[in-house]
Image (cartoon, rainbow, N blue to C red):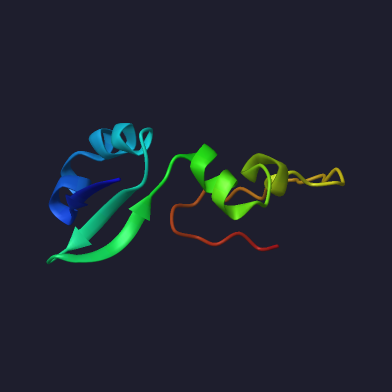
Length: 78
């Protein structure tokens, strides 16, 4: 378990990600814990819900045709 302050978290996210490989990293703001950074493996182990990737997979194929506006700032009519 590691603890970093919000400033370190904001200025060195790669460092915090590397630290999370060894266990949870608690991020504090003014000395109070505000969030925890976990590796995906640790999250899946703790949640017991299986793979996050499996949760995002859709069972049906979806055909999407994007609507693109060529005018900056204009919302395309659907």
